[in-house]
Length: 282
Ligand code: PAF
Image 1 (cartoon, protein in one colour):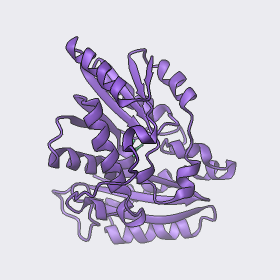
Image 2: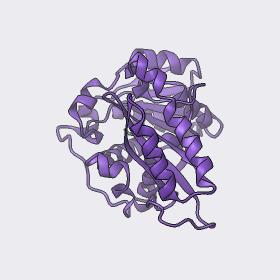
Image 3: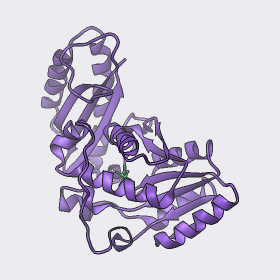
């Protein structure tokens, strides 16, 4: 497996691969890889010959300096894990300077309002940071396909919008959420959970599944009230938001329409660790 820390070396390698008619897929990550990331890589190999995996903890998408400082960095382990999938993976693990030179700031984007919902309300500047890094990485890697997990469903929609608005020639593929057997959505942050929070965290998916059932017969408001009450009874998990939203606009649902599709989105604090999840409702 080749590991690059410089975009110039990576560009030269990709150029050589394209001359040999190799199709390039891309899985951007912030490292601390788990089976969810590996499933994106596997999805990538169904469509392309070589997968570039970037491992970069992007400073501009963090609104909380402690979260940025404590974000797990496990490059050696990440490489060992990727090697279990294929040798045809290129890891791009750049330094902050390689990406940002000396100017660690975000570009300002408009994502037609998608950026103001949910995560956008609670994480100031987050989607400008995500847009900045994903646009840079797509320009460096120039893949035919890029793969993103649906756990960050809002991010996925925003990246589709970014690519459309900036006419970036890549197909964005959303991949299903990968879960532990107890239902907890896989996340790099899970390794920072305390033992008792780890035991309690599957409650999040349990509530999402029950909310989905209730949404069959009840209004979005009623379901939201029920979820809020369930979390009030839970001493270990603090609900930040639960929202039932239209899948396309990500706007909170006021009244259900049969022709629209909806999803429930949730953000929860388990101690200091923030976990997000979502579920398709219809
Ligand atoms: O989803 C993530 O891990 C990050 O937001 C991404 C897409 C790698 C950009 O830093």
